[in-house]
Image 1 (tube, rainbow, N blue to C red):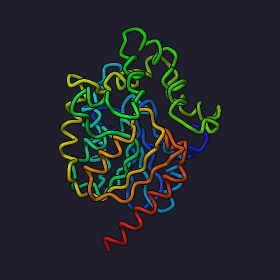
Image 2 (image 1 turned 120 degrees about the vertical axis):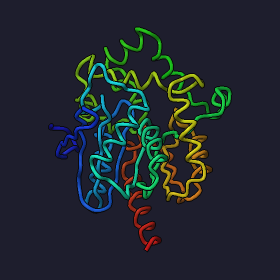
Image 3 (image 1 turned 30 degrees about the vertical axis):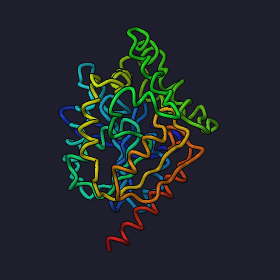
Length: 303
């Protein structure tokens, strides 16, 4: 595939009866990078380039995303994504993993990680969640208000969600730019990179399934998964680096503060004041520097 800043070899693994696409670049300690919605491994292109001289960077596309299979009858629930990640890690024989997560990649990755703590050497947490507010009222009371949640919630409206996400490719075309501060970096070539694996109505099915799982009420499908994951995160002493885009309209500072409380063995947080939700495009340089410093210092400490 001829995409800007994505000069990587495409690889495929058979996972739960489907082909999952991934890139595997560099050698050394394993860094596993998990994307969210509506992105794919292309999101980490700069990070992979910046780390693969020293580390083995593996970035899979979740089923239904990127160049992984997009079956019409697949289970695109978050629990199913967690199950497939477990199978992918087993298939690849990965261990001593530095896990890098963002957006739904955090829900999926952290939910897997707390059930396989022996395989996780370090966590690098970018804007995401691994828990939920105790009540919807608590979520609504957050300041600044995470106004991105109601916007995403609107995509649950029948027909409107299908037309916007699957018909217009609106999640990528219109919402991805809203999640990036430095929009001058979203050139036509970069936008084409994000759109490339999603040329048809059917290819965007998993995007809609994911956005319709945004947990805002206890009966929402991902709510219980996040409650379970949050309980297991509490007090976990895995070495952790938090890197946060402070202009995120979804994962406002409350989420960062919760991670700092729940994961006591965290390095000083890297707050990026001019980064938004998709901080991998806003400030990849600071993310790369933070990960390299964190892994180097933790390796020396362990020695």
